[in-house]
Image (cartoon, rainbow, N blue to C red; front, top):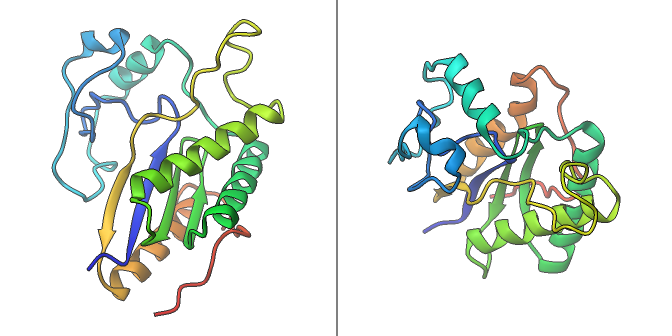
Length: 197
């Protein structure tokens, strides 16, 4: 039985649907990216981030996007965490680990009455509203005033269902170590609850 999920959500432009390393996308929504080939959906739930790839091609793909790739600043990460904390309090989610990085977010969340996709959409929506209301939306200077802001998030999510305490602990450790692997300080967020078997 699923007891939790490890989820990764990405900022706009972080992981493209036709990445050489693979993606979880079935199709390409952006006309600008079609010239780089079809979607590269993978079936594995293991990370493909360390697979070799052509960095110049990846940079060309990022330049072809309608908007520049989103990279959250430290201040934006604080607002995202605050939004997550408010949504957690409102919805009763149990988040066991959270890492907010410039291009993506990892979290481990306990099974809830909502499907994990709905949990994720609520968190993404809360973060977007928080960023927008505090003038911190990363795309606000890219569109004319009065125009609807595009989402700073890529659509969808990557998820792994966890069905044992060992899986949950391993995922928590992976999530908590993610900032350190990127050369950043460990993160502690108020919305994270300690996992108890």
